[in-house]
Every structure is written in structure tokens, then in C-alpha cells.
Length: 180
Image (cartoon, rainbow, N blue to C red; front, side):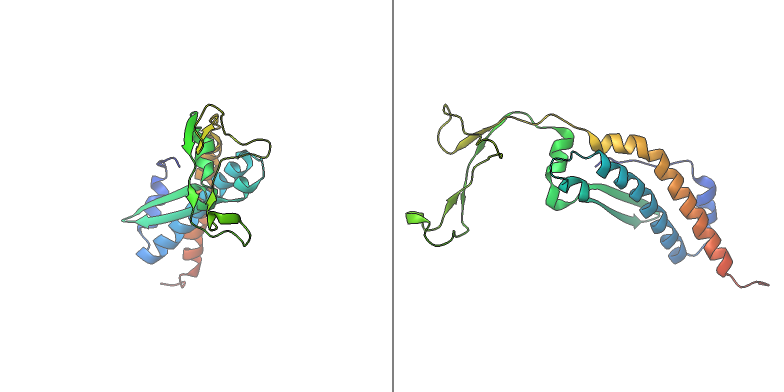
């Protein structure tokens, strides 16, 4: 995930500063979520779509501490490989390992222990020159879909956040009793 600092919203920040802390936090949370949703949508559309699972599992989360809001947008934990696809990986050797999970009955004398290997639908990455128990991974070319999404959708996200802050201030102003 990339770190991005948004600037240029000083007037809106000044309007927020006049509100109480709880209202500020709610408006800021709504704004961060609106901006993150714009980037997450673009990121999910740009994600490599071999199975579509990565694009469906782009997650957003935010935190607000000491007046600083931060949004994290990227692949959810169960699609960890999104970061690898984004940055790429060099050719490397992987040692296979033995899983301690018990196999189903009738798995032979191994006591249910299973050897894990790296494979794709069309081949197993086992080289004849490598010792048994090692696999040569061919590597993955980088596909920087996350940074591309941020570059394209970033300005749209700032607009969405600005609109949400303005709408939040208007909602608060409308709820204040008249005649003060």
C-alpha cells in the first residue's frame, strides 16, 4: 500500500475545527471512507483477473489519531498475493515442506503427513536438476495496479472527500436549532 498525504483542504479543515471532536471525527471518517471507496473501486477494476478473487477482495480500513486520518487500501489478507503481483517477484527456489495436517484415511504409511509442492493447473514446478523437495519458481512480472489506481483515482478521491466534508458540515449546520 502506498502512503499519500492529501493537502489543499485548508478551508474545509478550518470549518471542521469549529465543530466538537466527536462530530469532527464522524465527518472525517465519512470523508475518508468516500475517498477510499473511489480508489478501491479503481484498484479492483485494475487488479489482474485470472480468477477474479483479487479484484473482489480489495479492502479499505481507516484510522484517525491526533487529528490525522489514514486510509489503507489494498488486497485483503486472504489474497496476500496481490502485493506480490503488484511488485513482482524474481525467479527463486522454494523448499517444499511437510504439512502436519492429517490426511484422510487410506493415505499409506506416511501417517497422514503430506508434502506440499508448488504447482499450476498445467505443470508442477519441479526441475529434474534440483534435488527432490525443492521447486524452481519462474518468478512473476510486476503489474503495478495499485499505484496506477492511486495515480488515476487519487484526484477523484480528493474531490469525493471534499464533497463529503462539505455535506457533513451542512448536515451539522442544519441540525443546529435556529435562533441560537
